[in-house]
Structures are given as structure tokens and as C-alpha cells.
Length: 273
Image (tube, rainbow, N blue to C red; front, side, top):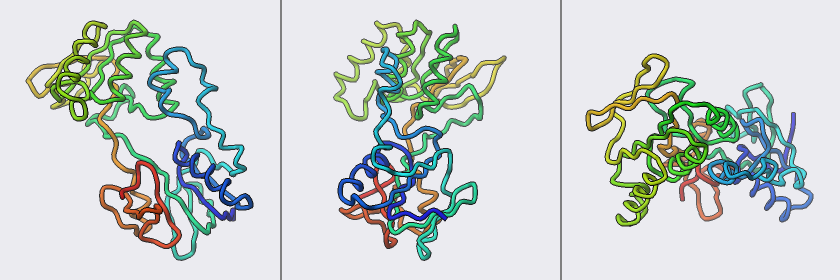
């Protein structure tokens, strides 16, 4: 059984930052990192901007390996036993730990249609898939007017693709930006060739002749071959719930990221202070 001083569950930027900090604070500690992704930790922001502008993929990789952490990739932790200080993954491997950090991040909000034509833009593999689709002459629809949706729409237009944005709010980034800036961004995107359907949310979603048919809250319709969902994320708390941790819009932690269970911590999008 692999046994670690520190076991990190998750493989994103938070997990990497934790491994770096642990190695600096405890040079002799053993670190294990279990991630559902097949890739070692990488920077996510370039997925929606820099890579589309030509930055090579090799620039996104973080230096987790330099911490000496043992990476268990392509594995999902399915259970934690706080009493025994053990975690089990989907292959049946049991990991011992002295301290465990949950860095499971968030899960994209889902659309009411299970389809390969829907992309939840979150990972490197999502980028690679969308980049391949962007080389084809197909119609794209971006659902949501937040940060990720806006950057993906801009990236697709840079590739010369037909893009429609369905934005339920009064403008782009309307929840965080002043009204005049939000309206300016809508006009800017229109000038760049993005079809902006502002004030329209999604009321229904179906397939039609190989395409996706979106019915909107204003009674309209939108047809596209590929949908990119940018509806935000929900904290990935299923594992924390199984372990009996206190949950309130995420794993409740104190100022030291300590959860309600001894020796279990949480950080990043999954944590709630």
C-alpha cells in the first residue's frame, strides 16, 4: 500500500501549489498526488487564450515533478476513511496518509443533453478536442456570457468559425462588470463577427438532423453543430460528503484550510471559508 506523509487528491493548479509548498516546508516529507486527469498538473488559463494565439503546449506544464511527488494519474479517489487515514481509488488501490488535501476543484454545470457535441471547457483534452473541431467548417454556439465562454468565443472567431453566444444576462460579464463595460464588450464582440443573443437563456435542448437545437427563453431557436457550455462550476464535494466532512457550498474549512475531520484539508474551488 502506498503510504505518504501528505496525500493530495486532485491534479490542478491548487494541487501543484500544495506540493510545492509542502516540499519547501518539509523537505523530507513524502508526497502522493492522485488525479483523475491523465496529465500532470498544468496551467489552465492558457487553454482559453494563449494556446489559441500560438503559445506551445509545452509552456503550460507546471513543475510538479521537481517536488519529488509521486503522481498517480488517470485515477479517481472514490472513498476516504478518516479513521484509518486511508483513501481508495477506482482501481482498488489504497493509499495511506498522515494528512490529506482535497483539491478536487469544481465540476462544470451540465446541459440537459448527453451528447458528444457538447463540450464542457475545463481541461487540456477539452482544448485539444475543440481545437480540432475549430479546423472544420461547423457552427458553434457558446452558452453563457462569463469569462470562459467569452474567451472561447473569441478564440473560435480567431479561427474564422461561425460563433453565436447565448447570454442570459444583459451583457457580457454582467454579474461582475459595470453595465457600460458589459455593453461595450457586447458591441466589441459583434464587431468581431460573433452573433450576440443577449438577454436570452436556454429553455430547452434537443438534437435535430445531426445538430443541436437550442430553444431560448424568448421563444427563439438556435442551431449549431457544437455547443460549448460556459455556465460556471459547482464544487466537487462528493468525495468530501462520503468522508463525512461538513459541506456548505463547498468543504467548510478554517483559516488554515483544515476541514471538520482531523488531518483532512481542502483548498481551491472545492473549499468554502
